[in-house]
Amino acid sequence: DSKFLSYGLVDNNNPILTPSASMSFWNLLTVGVESIFDITRYGHKAGYGNRAWRYQELDPGVSLTYAFSPDDISWLPTTIEVELGYMYEYHPRAMGGNANGWGDTQFVWLEASMEDLWLEPYFYYERDIDRDNGTYLYAEIGHTISLIDGEEEGDDPILSIRPMVGQGFGNAQRVRAYACRYDAALDDYVPVDKAGLMDTCIKTELAWQVFEHFSLSGYVAYTAFVFDRQIREGARCYEATGDHERSWNFTAGVALTASF
Image (cartoon, rainbow, N blue to C red):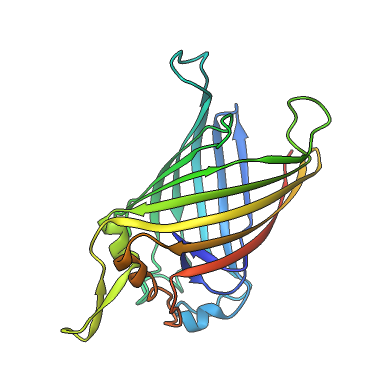
């Protein structure tokens, strides 16, 4: 990825690598780990040490997934795939406990998607257990356009493009942890203490199924804080280096996925 964004906010303004691996059992249980590698010296100036070509985060987790169809529940209009998960966010001790609060934390999350509908609605709920006790909600709609169909009816497209738009929302604890404002009376920055709409994301992804178990994809995205003025102004001071003077970002990335 060209940048590392959390909730539309810059955690690393330089390119990063995000390797991950997972194992699934019975089409129900998934166990995996994700990692964030800093490939530049950005961390040196951002306050958490030079992590160039070393990990700055490890995220082991476990999740349960099930697709509820109209055959299971008669009043459902379409199949709804639900995933419930837990993740532990681990930072190396060299980063933990510093002024920027890079300590470990834990998350629980819930995802729900309806991929059979034309607008492919997607919903995400996240709760931070330790760090800020904050809740984040994200809703998205998009549409997958097949550019090259699969060989047989029902197969995934060989080449597809998916434009989408999404919107995030944070409760007061989540916004307080990430957005701040300048208080003239105190001559200092203080947290934005309110719930509200956070990042808006417009994204397009191109996916190519190269072989049966190997795919290549790429994306470009624009994120901005559009709807809440206080949170938009608060987002501008988030970047750890203090260089972030805007509340919007362009990002891009590529991904290789192999399965067996």
